[in-house]
Image 1 (cartoon, rainbow, N blue to C red):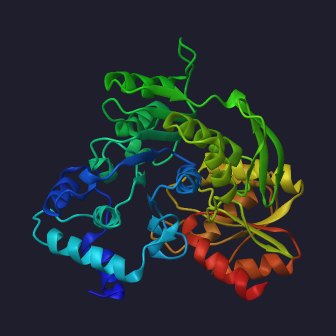
Image 2 (cartoon, one colour):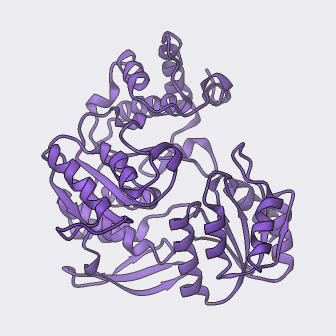
Length: 424
């Protein structure tokens, strides 16, 4: 099997679809000799921030001398990004080799694995082959029934935060979603929790979502740690990163990930590193080196063109706050969303920073049609136009002479980047 055959197999129609449950991945891993059993994991779930947290943790652990594997989704430019070693995507030949082994096992199964299950199993094989010291494992959808939850133990469970998203699968309240995410907690394994939206506070200082997670941890005798954001003191933000102080450390930290929300992600990472016993020197160096595509990423400085993959209300709200803090002006926004997202709520937020909105339909069957999205903005009193492609939208926005922000689904990231390279 070569690389093209591997990719075609993974994307083949017969394997498409999301079917929560652990029976298929459990059987597939058994047929492959349970490669996950020989690996150590940090399991990461949450509504937002998973990728940024993963990238920072990876950089820190790599600085500490660990051979670190990373499993994430979705990819933003090339499929290989989903399986990485020390931040370097898997090679074409290694991916083809792992997928061929997975295919041979999968084709013996009566209940065929999904695409995500195939890729997860291939990642386990690759990380075992490379003898990783630790694997940063990002959950796909939810946690409890996500196929990454086939692992039976972890060094640390990280829940980056809770907000309403994928409600048709995970539940229609933050508390229900918290219960699904808490499904990654393992017996006796510590869990760290970031910011959680909830319906109401509880009596012990935690809100209702945090209480759900803590109760799940207590049932598993798992130490529970909530990130203490009062230790965090932002100093400055720019298009190239941020500087912040963190109580307990004499000198400020620097990160190269832009966005007013990134110091909060870094606070979670520092807390995790403290629990793992990582030296401060490695934390500092790793945080400064960490990069993550598609998160308030500046693609051009003249004109200023930025992309942020905020695709739910919490993510869009964070991007809007960053525009206000760093740019402090109305800008042109190129945006496209999935039809199953809370796009009206997100549009209301985007209107706070948008001079004009350039609407597109991302290449995905779930995408909302551009003209329908444009109507939403017009009804909110903001000038909006639908465009047949991301490239045409970027060209129009740049020609209008405005600072441009691509905001929305990561499914439009590659097309957006390609358009910027060609036009700017």
